[in-house]
Image (cartoon, rainbow, N blue to C red):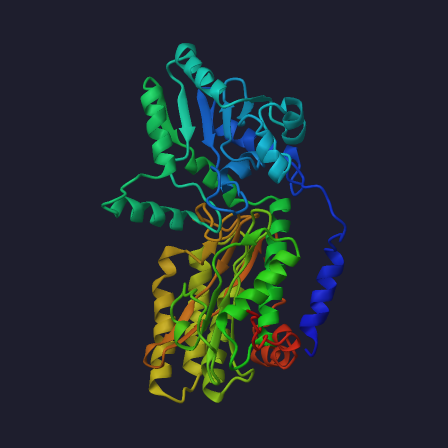
Length: 488
């Protein structure tokens, strides 16, 4: 296991070498060909029928000096990364029109070339859409629908669009918080857009596009899985580096910085979610992200962090002892948890419902529990509660949560597991009397004939984790600057 992290890093970086010379910024994604976006739109056309019309609003200009990132929904349908763009899919003609802002010469002189309404031929060539027009033309085009047929249904987003480091659940929370604010009260951008359409096109029925897109996004294509796999590799490399660098006296935010360096150095465009680097008493808070605590000898560290790699995410978690060696108590609890966790992980397979897998796993957990001797009654009580809580959840059939363009991805996992599904599992064991919280998380891809744990190379066994932690990390290679003298 010695030097496993360094050697694995070198293998990955040889495969994913990034040229060091300067390159022009691409005007359209190189991660997917136009044909893949066209196939997604074709599926939407099939779903809405000839009387359906999709109107999709893209993300607006970002706040502050931050890089523009398109919403997941708009990118999924078009691959176009331009602020204030609109996409219209006409089910009758099966034609797609993108509405782009006019060219802003001043902005382009400052930031570089952007696709605009004046780039008709270029946009059609790059993206595969049928037509390109400026935003003011959309009003006339939509008004024409009223004259063409009264039975037309407009489909658009009813749920908050997923933005930077955002899943739908957080989008809903953000909107709910704003509505509850007595001095704000604004609805979501999507609700405002629906309101405008109802005001301007009252004759037409308006329906939610979300169920259609959710069902499509549930099943990932081979190219999407490749993007998720890369995001998982980077997440795992970051956790490996944490295992090497963590020791008493390290501050949580230093581990965050290490991970972010690895992500950005190797092509990520940002965070999938804020870093969950939680030591000692912070670990029981599943979404703790302050990052301000200094780690102490004898504590646990939980690390749950992943990148946004070309609009695709991962979600991986590992636990480690801050001092690099599992104590007897830590070994006792972690050994039980890991055995129970693997009882779930390695039973996952295609064609089987989650409830069946959970029932099988719960039975093995009971056997493991019966065969385990605990040093403290509270440890036995915690392990018993862990197994009983998992067994009570068998009827839900929910193994974990989906992962894709969002960390908590959309789509229903009801029914047998199908090829192209991607999700995590993350059961947690708690000993509340001692503030102990143990949780692992791995990423699973369902293939036609098997389930693949694509984060499985990241050590989870205690001996392997200790071997990695014995290696010298980046924080030791590049120690903290003591103090910079300031000249008057």
